[in-house]
Image 1 (cartoon, rainbow, N blue to C red):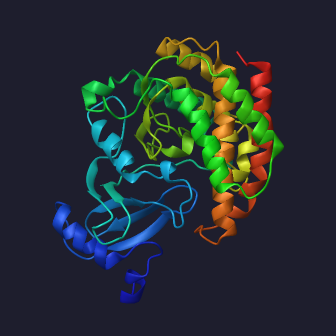
Image 2: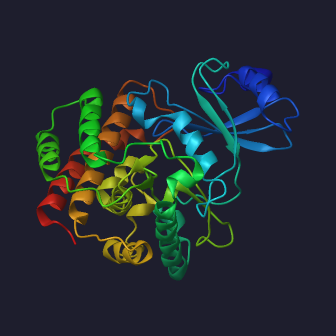
Length: 346
């Protein structure tokens, strides 16, 4: 890699990052090379190395339009807090604020060796039994997360669980107003009906906020072992069933265009979402009687996120490929949210 390449890694000022590493990262030997691993859908994620050790650096997307969905300090805090829990996470290494050279907040965590299954093709390369075991392991880890006592890991003030559902509905509608590129009557209807249908919270726990198969690093030899859960930028304290509802919504084929048309979570070889809901209920002991609402909330949230990605794509602010399909997902996801509320899926 030439000196010019090292300075111009898109979205990452390597000389500034090297200065930060020299001051804050134990074991850094000098000189960094970087590779963009994921760009534009969520926070920008880079693999960086000094030739001896590898780390992962995360920063907000370019031209981010939904600030609450790209909170780097929040992500770093929860990863650090969960280090000694039953929830597998990458070890937190260092956090840089806006005054540390990059001009934006960013986090540094250890690199975890493993596999990330993003596409149906990657998932279908596994034997059928392993696919089921992997899906069950992910649900079990979610139940472990929701069993963590926030106060015991230093996260007692991480969020306000009371009124969480009402705030979520309002917040994602506010985000819709911020990022929308078009009028969508079903979005207005879904917002109105969600606001009117909010149940009492089912409980309070740490919630991940974007829990799906490709936000987990799996063991290379056994995909039923979760090595680390990643992408914690939307984590908070709130109703754990919001996490479950969103996880189950990711199984809907309507989500597939958000990940270039082949999202692993939409594979029909995964267990049915009713089966996964039952496994979660057994593992957590939680009542799923209002699951239809939580599914509708999940559809609402990812429809807004998809519109935000689509808006950044239209402005030329995404990095990588596959963003041209994301806007197609918004209307079908919104319609599915309305159906989930109507049918009150058990």
